[in-house]
Amino acid sequence: MLDISQTTKPIQKILFGSPGTGKSYKVREIATNSLGIKWHEQTKSLENTIKTVFHPEYNYADFVGKLLPQTIGSSVIYKFYQGHFLRALGLAYKNLINNSNENVLLVIDELNRGNAAAIFGPIFQLLDRETDNWSTYDVNLSELEIVALLGSMGYDAQTTDKNIQVDGSNFDVFCKMTKMNLEMSDNQDGLRVLENLTSQRISIPRNLSIIATINTSDESIYYLDSAFKRRWDWEYVDVPGYGIEKIKDIAIEGRDEKWVSFVNKLNDFIKVNHHLIRRIEDKQIGVWFLKSEDNQVTKESIENKLMFYLWDSVFPRDRRPLEDLLSKVDKQSIKLITYSDFIALSDDFIDAIISCEWLTF
Image 1 (cartoon, rainbow, N blue to C red):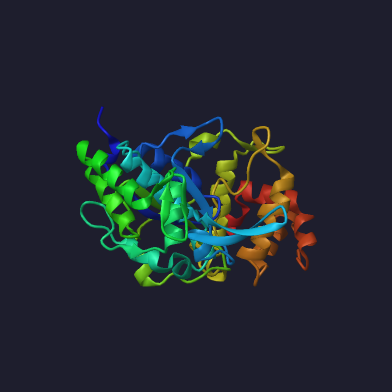
Image 2: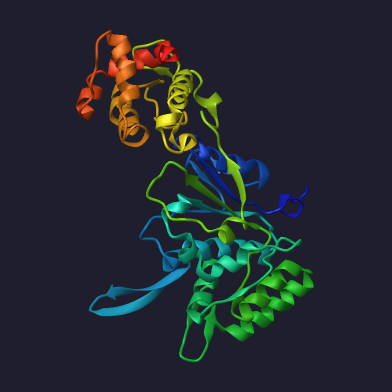
C-alpha cells in the first residue's frame, strides 16, 4: 500500500471567510482527503491532530511551552508544559522515528485574534520549506524545551544537574543506540530528527501540516504583516458556505423556507445595501452561522444571534435598510431606536427576507 505521506506535500494554509461558512468542516475534509488523517465519528475528532485557538492573551509560551509551579504536598516544584506546537512537532517526529510516516496536523483557529507574529516568535523562520518539504531553516531550543519535545515523542525524559535522561539512560547513550537502529533500517528522516535533537534545534518535518482559520468579520483582530502572510497558502471559503449538502433539508421554524435559501436571500439583502456597509464580503454569513435543532433553525436563535449580528455588526451605523424593509412589510413608517424594537418585528423581518421584499428598494 502506498504511503500517502510520501506522495503528498504538507499543507500550510489559511482558510478565511465570513462567520459560519464551514471553515472547520473544510479543515476536516483537507485532513482526511489530502493528508490521510482519520476522522473518528464517535469522538468527533481527527487522529494525529493538535488543535488550538489564538486569542489576545495567548502567547509564545502557550504555543511552545512554559514552566509552571506545581504543588505536591507541602512542596512546590516547577514543571515544564509542552505548548501546542511542541506537541504537534513531537508527534510528527515520533512518527518519523518509528518509520510510520503518518501525517500530523496542527490546527490554529482564529489565527488573527492573537498576535501571531509574537506567538510564533522564532518559530516563524520554520514556515519556509525546501523542495523536500522540510523547513529551510532551523531554530535552537533550550534544554527544557528539548526535554519537553522528547516527552511529546513518548519518551520518559527529564533533566538533571549534569545531563538529560531519556528512558533511564544518558541522552548521549540514548542517541547512540537510536542512531544505530535508524541506520540499520535506513530511516533517513528519523536520522534527521535525531540530528536535530542532539544539536538542540528543530525544523518542521515533511509530515507536519499547519492549517489556520480566520473569521474576517471579527473587528477585534491583530494585523498580519506581509512577511507572515506570504509563508502560507490562502483559500477563501465563500458564502453561503462549505458542506451545504449536510443541511440542505433544514428549514426555518414555522415556515416551509429552507435555511440555505434564507441565508442566500439574506446575503443578497446585505449586498444590495453595500453602499452603507464597510467590508461587505466580511459582513455576510454562512449556513453554519446558526445550528439547527430537530431539523430546523429556531426563531429564538434567529432573534438572539442572527438579528443581533445584523444590528450590531452589519448595520451598526445606519439602520435605514432594516427600517425600510420593515416599513414596506408593515406598510407604515418604522423607526428602530433600540434592539428590542427590531426583535419585536422578528416575524415580519423573516417573512420580508423570504419574500424578497427588499428587491424593490
